[in-house]
Amino acid sequence: MQSLLLTVQMILIIVMGLGLNSAVFKAYHEAGSEEERKSAFSTALVLLVLWALPVWVLLSSLADPISRFIFDASSQAVNLRFVFLGVLFDLFRLMGLACCGPGKKRSVTGSSMSSIFRFSSF
Image (tube, rainbow, N blue to C red; front, side, top):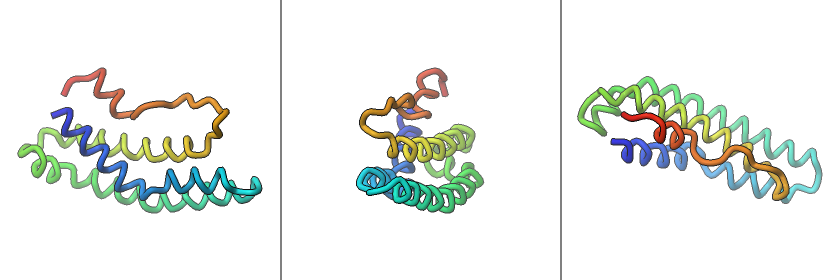
């Protein structure tokens, strides 16, 4: 059950991320000025908010039918909602990491949902 939830999470991160993290990383580090960096980051952030938040609301509202489709029971709907929320947080976390320079300390590592799964049982 847990591995299926993690699989759903990884697929959603790829689909909902739209490849913005790698695009922001490239644009941010190849930008010639601070203004270009801010522009690349803010444009990607606005696009991510306009895309990821509505998709998250839709997925969260459809958690029961999705749970019945994937698990043949609606008992996992709450866990799916946590996965969807974790995906949303991961997308914004990865967006921030894309702007970290090679010499900057990265304090946030790993997937937020993976951490939750390690310390709880479903």
